[in-house]
Length: 269
Image 1 (cartoon, rainbow, N blue to C red):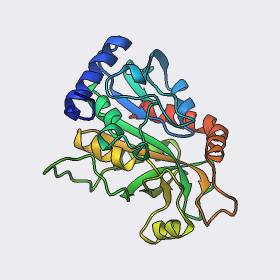
Image 2 (image 1 turned 90 degrees about the horizontal axis):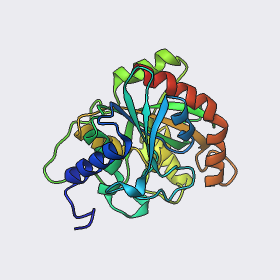
Image 3 (image 1 turned 120 degrees about the vertical axis):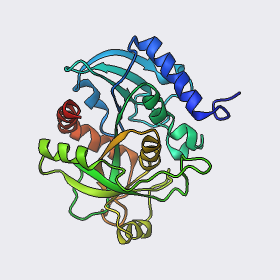
Image 4 (image 1 turned 180 degrees about the horizontal axis):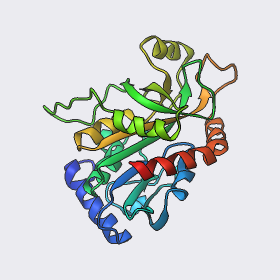
């Protein structure tokens, strides 16, 4: 039986068992998926206990995206808790199916995490945003036409991105903006017309991850906080062509600020 054919909860439980064996950490209290620009934050939040190549854990694959580590890292936090840092995000556009996209989130839940931190690099639609700026996700619009929920599974998403956790983030950094994140399928960047559409329907930033993962995290009973790094202005707003190199460079320049923000945030989650 392949990973795609196995019951997703059973596969997540198997992954959590292997992770516990390889890391020596029986339970992880908090999980973070670190997207473009956020990877170095893992070094700031605590002491690394173990680093496991994702391809050695059931259901995971080596990362196919530059800027993602392709590992699962267990970190001991200063207060005695443990954090699981997922550097092996599978994107919807990789064609592995929605189960693969949310396997990291489900594994985190199976490993004991009750809080999920989802981060990404995003294009700014809101004209007030600037490259290098972190923005809290207040809500999302999922334009992938896909859901991680299967069958008659009805999950309320009214307060998907925790108001409590967003409030904690603003106490740490009062100037943090909030916005609505719009997930497109990718991997191509959005056209100027699609960016205008995203703005018309209420979006403030656009990207290719996070929304589907957040839904799975809610199904698993986790409390969720989402953060986008504005890596560039979206198509039709900035005049120069978009490129992934630009995304990586913006993330590199913002790394110190993002690392400090997440370090302080994780301490109060």
